[in-house]
Amino acid sequence: MKKKEVNSSRMPVYRDSGFELDDAKTTADAFRKETEHSREPDVYIYSRYRNPTVVSAEEEIMKIEGCEWALLTQSGMSAIDTALSVFQNGKETRPWLFFTEIYGGTISFIESVLKSRRGLDIQYFTPDNGNYDLDKFEKEISVLKPEFVYIETISNPMLIVADVANITGIAKQHGTKVIIDNTFATPWLYKPLTEGADIVIHSATKYFSGHGNITAGVICGNDNKLMQSAIEYRKFVGHTLSPDDAYRLQTQIQTFKLRFSRQCSNASKLAGYLNNNPIIKEVWFPGLKSHHTFHIAEKLFGKKGFGAMITFDFDGKDKNEKRSMRDHFIKLVSEKIKLIPTLGDPHTILMPVEAVWGTKYPEPGMIRLSVGFEEYSELESTISKALNKIKGQIKV
Image 1: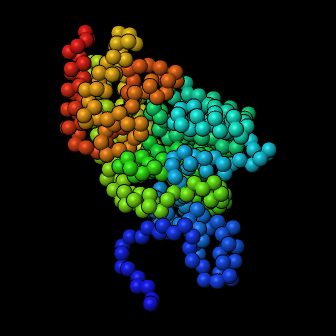
Image 2: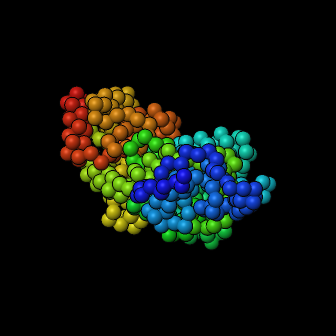
């Protein structure tokens, strides 16, 4: 009996581990063409290689990112591993240069895997006074001549905005590739590939999914050779996203722009409120004129927003009081604002910076907020009540 085609508007979930091949010749042709690593194969073979549901979700991301290809992986970290490993060329691998203000998990991966296990030559570039000195960067890169430079458009957790266009321009002059983690900015605010970046990474767990119930990563680019190399590496190490998660991610991506634009708006309002509160010592948010990289953020993002992340510090008389204020705040808002170690969720969530990052950011009063898309009045009310209660218990 002939199978009837179902008139669904969505790509179905193909859970097949392997796909039916008609005969030996079809099989031989399929495996031969597989070595070409096309973005979408003519014939699917095995879901670790490529899967139609996953490819369909990748195409949705390509529309948002405006890129030639996108490859989904099981997590943001597997996306990072895949992107970096593309540039590992045995003994001929040149140094890899990382900006220090990046996700802590990336730093741990660098130290534990890239340096300790793989023995790669890893170098770091550190900001000065909350900003990146591009003259200093150019001097360093001209001497080091690294294989690539790795940066975050908006850093975690201090929200330093990198001058991606100028950094990319300097890197290209010295034959260096550019890899950018664009998770915090998203393509809604900025598209680094348009400035000449070679690879853009996202933890799709965060804003692309936006509901805190999928773990995924994605690598985006325009260069076909980089894509082929990334497909091969992803296939061999088994980093491909599952079809079930790809299906759910594709449905959630449909609301990405609506969600993230609302989150940016909420964050801008909340950052202004916190910045004027007497028991808050400092607020880090790229949309505040007091932020070290405000003008860079304004140049890169225009009027779309400044992201949905805020970091702030309590103004206590000493570390003990600041730690007490932090802990009290977390308890007071816990019914509405949960302590969850991620970001990009529908509702605002928080993380205590010192507890997670330790000696890198030792101030105990610092909290990182991932602002959600709930009603702003509800969000400010929750935080205002908590701050007023803490204020009433200390001398300001």
